[in-house]
Amino acid sequence: MSAAIEIAETASNNIEQLLQEMFAGDYANNEIALGVLLDGKEEIQIQLKVTRTPSEFIDTDFYDDESAIKPLDQQLKIES
Image (cartoon, one colour):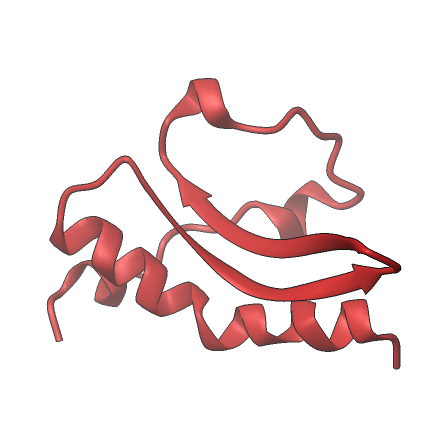
């Protein structure tokens, strides 16, 4: 497994907390750095960002809209 995939896999450990904090604080978005890849002297930061600001949405064509677009689990909006 590549180092990039290893870092990206940590997103699943962070996504629900990012969403919970976003809703609890009524923030437009929330983000976290997951790790850094080193390319010689250059650093490449892997980030996870959640946003509900449409102007910040990234244009994309989902390979499978049915699996890429889901209703929000309302439990994420309830403070722990």
